Amino acid sequence: MTNKQKRSLGMQLFVYNDMRQKEIAQYLSVTEATVSRWAQADKWEDTKAANTVTRDNIIRNLYIQAQQIQDKANEENRNLDSKEMDIIMKIAAAIEKLDKKLTIQTVIMVFKDFNKYLLDIDPEICKQLVDYQRKFIYSLHSNE
Image (tube, rainbow, N blue to C red):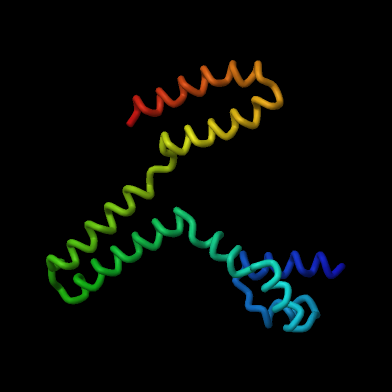
């Protein structure tokens, strides 16, 4: 395996398999210093954060928080107090906001960027697509 391949594999192990740099160094038969240099140069921490701080993970963690509050009250054989209810209501509102997978604003922004791109390549196709894009946006707006 080449160093380039080891570096790529090391990043994958760090980001997706949650392995520590020391474990990666042992697994790839390189020094910890080498792995550390790769991690800094390629910003492994940033990549890992970007992959773990996703909308789905945030929603999952919010559900877990709400469940923990409910479990605590159940363990103590009591109803939720007003502070706990307020927290759960805020969690529910946050989940509702995050759970909307596609907003009209996002669709419009993507279409706008795509149209700029396509206009340079094929203006005729771009003109044809704009009508379909408008219809799609209208259908999204009608369903809200």
